Image (tube, rainbow, N blue to C red):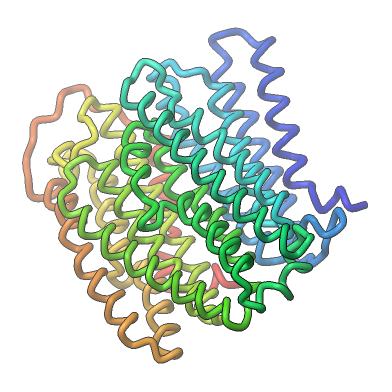
Length: 462
């Protein structure tokens, strides 16, 4: 009966096999519709399975996995973002003549790894899930085989990702050597001792995870990888895989206690402040939209790490709101970038020139997303940052709260450049200007999520 706890993961695995097998028998002209149709069906069933396990708290497979409401929330998050990514990718794959079955299968493979990660209670199981995400991500980053930037992105990501994986494994070996176990529940007692081997192992493990998060100072791979990857995959990197790593890091950090807990939490504080500040400062100089959003995501990772530094129920509640609205705003912006790219406008900030006049829906939506990322009411981004700010003040971390506010003000500068280009600069658009129902649907859903959360953030905390 334990297999019922793996229904979401089994669904994804079955969907991947179905897509690969179907691609062998369907006609060439029907392959894209078949692959994306099966992908949408798979993720819909995955969502239903994750929702059915939403109230379950149970260990499975000798303690290797823990199915609980925290993990189930993020599985629901993965399912929704996965559906939106498929809508976002459909026209892009067709226009670039990419292999649809391979694209969708790799994307579902990444979600399979992410789903395992958020339920892992054993370090080796977590590592297997993380490597499944990493290997599929390397391939997806280099999916535009005729584009030198995409090839470079995949190669850089692979080389630096391999170093991070080795660091992670090195940390696991230290922890196993000292405790004789790979289960978090078993090694939790040893994490409070502050022994040198435990400290080194824990920090090495966290450094590997922080690299996957692209947190400062492990962020150097992110701008190149996100710029060269296909635009829908850039969106996936910024909202999908990072969230899964964040949840895994949270499960690991939650077992710390004593002297080690203090050392690790203040290490996280330095990383969080560094990520917010460096991400926002470097973003000021970017003109390429993908690189700008890459540094923006680095800054937002800093905000999310603040929740783990605080470690209070209020901070974790703020984390869920922040993750939800950040993902919606990011996916919405990348849907608009995908559309402008399809109009042969490129991916520079100047590509948005005249957007508010030519495509009012996308122009107004861009305003909503930018306001949310900056943290301006009445958007969900404001509520996420407000809840995180209040959690910091409740723990008397006033300087941290001020740093968060100052970084929010700093981000206004580069986000405003996007709005200025869209509404206050004119540019001739090359006719014909085509509509895209799938991208418009993604943008509308993202706007609804952002605005509803701004009024009622509790729906993401239920």
